[in-house]
Image (cartoon, rainbow, N blue to C red):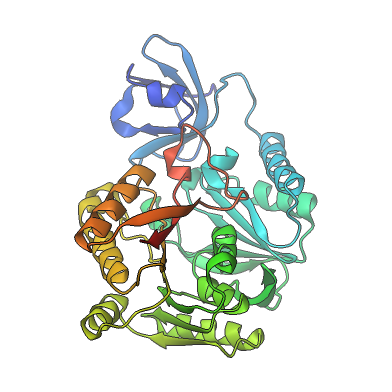
Amino acid sequence: MPQARLYINDTHDRIQRGHPWIFDNQIIREEGEYAPGDVVQVFDARKRPLGQGYINPASLIRVRLLTASVEEKVNAQFMAARIKRAWAFRQRLGYQGSCRVVFSEADMLPGLVVDKFNDVLSVQFLTLGMERWKEVVLEALEQVITPKGIYIRNDVPIREKEGLEVYKAFHGKAFPTDLVIEENGLKVHVDVANGQKTGHFLDQVLNHAEMARISKGQRVLDCFTHTGGFALSAANNGAKEVLGLDISADAVKQATRNAELNGLENCTFRAVNVFDYLTEADRKGEKWDVIVLDPPAFAKNRGALENATRGYKEINLRALKCLPSGGFLVTCSCSQHMSPDRFRKMLAEAAQDAGKRVREVYNGTQAPDHPILWGVPETHYLKCIVLEVW
C-alpha cells in the first residue's frame, strides 16, 4: 500500500526550523490510508516535502516527525541507527556509568526515553507511534549497549492520552531494581521500578556539583529535596548543617537512606509543606546561608503558566526573605513552559518585592546527556540559577 500523505498549511516556519510536531489544526488534506501509529509523509500546501513521521489521529499532536526527508526509509535499520548514534554521542562526551541514553525529540526519536543506571536500562515509550517500534527499539538497545537488564517504565499518564496501556514490567529476565549509582562522588539509591519517572533524575548532576562552591561551613536549607540531591552535595562539601525538606514522606525516607549510605551526619530531612515552612521561618526571623529551591514543575501545560509563575515567585520571595546579605539562593524550574526569560523576570520581581539586590554567579541547565535541540524549545526545560543576595 502506498505511503499516506498529509498536507499542512503554509504557517510552518516552526517545522522548517526543526520542530517535529504537526498539530491537528495544521492539516488541510490527507491522501491515502493509514493506521494509527503508521509513518506518513508530510508536505506543505504547495507540495513541498517537510518530512516523515508517525501519526496518531487521537492526539492533538497529529504527527511527530522522525526525519526531514520523504525519501529516507523509516524501518528497523533506521531506528537502530538512531539509537546507535545516541549512545555514541554519550560515549563521546565521556559517559559510561549512569546517564540518559535517549532523550526523545533531542535525539530525533520522539516519544522514547532511555536512562542507563550502571548496567541496567530504564525505558519509556510515551507515544503510540513509538510503541509500534517497541520490539525494534529494545532489540537495538540490547545489541548496542548490552545491558544486564531492561525495565519498562510505561506508567506515565501521557500514554493514556495516546490510547495506550499504563504499566511497568521487566523486559526479559528479572533483576534487583533497587540499585546504587555514583553521582559526583556520592553513592545514591535508585529504585528503577518505583522511583519517579525512570527511577532517578539525572539531569541535575552538574547543578548539584555547584554546591561545592558555596556550601563549606554554611547552614544550608534544601527545599523540595526529593531524594536529597542538592542537600547531599552540600553536606559532602563541608556544609556545617544541612536540612532537606519535602512534602513526600517516601522522598524523605529515600533521602535519609542516601545520607546514611554516605555517612553524612550533618544532613537531616523532614517531611513538611515547604511554602508553610518558609512562611513560618520568615515570621520567626530564621536565616540560612544557602537556600535551594528545586520544586516540581508547577506549569504542567501552557494554560497553567500564569498560576505557576505566581507560585514560583511566591516561593522565591519567601526564600529570599530568609537569606542574609552574602547568602546564596539556588533556584530551579523544570517546567518546559517556563522559559528562561520568564524565569529571570519572575526572579527579578521576587527580589524587588523582597527588598533584596542580587547578583548572578551561576546559570545552569540540564546535563549534556540531556542535549537541547535548537528549534525545539521543549528540550530546554531545566533552569538553575545561583544568586548572591547583596
